[in-house]
Image 1 (cartoon, helix red, strand yellow):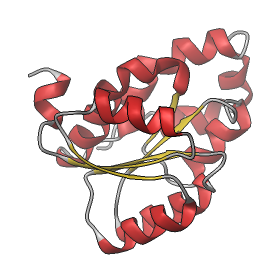
Image 2 (cartoon, rainbow, N blue to C red):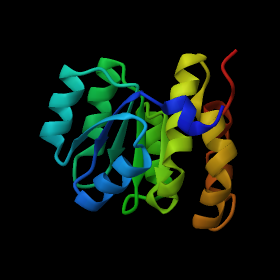
Image 3 (cartoon, rainbow, N blue to C red):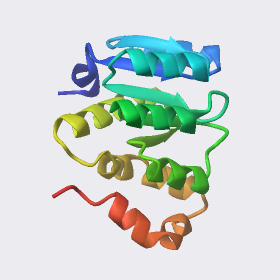
Length: 165
């Protein structure tokens, strides 16, 4: 089953302050039932009043980490999607704060695949960071200038990408 089949009909919340990003994600995820929000307040309201299979949260502009806290409180897995906050520190912070995934806007065309990873991990009670590592660790190695970012925090990342047993 491909990613689009896995996400068909799933409820997804997208929170980003850039209208073009909301439009792009809505188009890329057109097989899903989508709600969008362009502000922290609207995203928080939707998270608190609706159930979602996954929330896609921008970090900058909509207080993404505060929204991540809300998503965690209501049991909605969150995929952090960012361009401006693309750093080793924000990657680790996202993982520490309970995000299910951390994806760069540079890879936005692959969002159906990332959303499918998060949903499938939840359905199968698996660790979504294992798929994240398979799909994006190489991207971050290139972006962050090698594997030093993983080596500096080796124990953290080895534990993070360990499959649930």
